[in-house]
Length: 196
Image 1 (cartoon, rainbow, N blue to C red):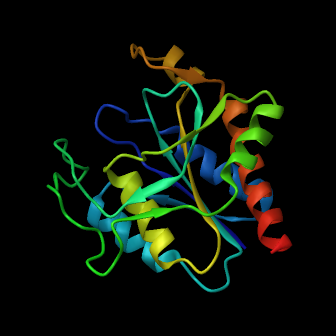
Image 2 (spheres, rainbow, N blue to C red):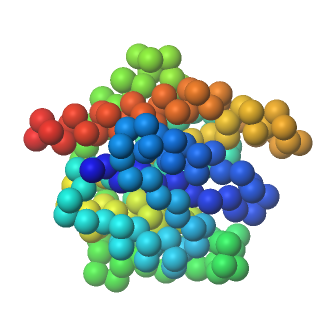
Image 3 (cartoon, one colour):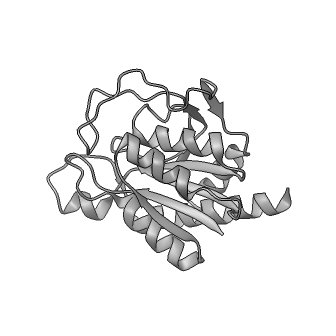
């Protein structure tokens, strides 16, 4: 089974589109959907508990408010650092996620192939080489450090519907485009895993 994760809302972003995306895509594909807390410590603990030998793949998602495209993340850093506290009020400074881990992981999946596939479907997408040092990166690094199956992280913009209903001036994509992107990513990584 594939594990798909999204995040709860945080700070002024009370409505996180990845929460809905993760649940709806997992239900439609028969995957396991889980929502992670925007908390460095609790998110790391939860993703570690969720990883199992039975999983075919892990597809993690997060919100990138300033992005205008779907970002497929290549690199995860062994670093937690933020001047903005998480939902628990915690703001780590230059802390390692795992003391015994390397400074960074470069995802060895054929991520350019996924980006090409997304673009072929008319979905604005690109590779990203910095997942930040906030909770998304913590979860991504944890999965690459511990998972025994392929794992990828995809950052999404806001959905256009949420932006239209709010006073925020952020980049966005229609929800159905983001849904298609996540579903495509899950199907792609499942096929890739079965070929290896």
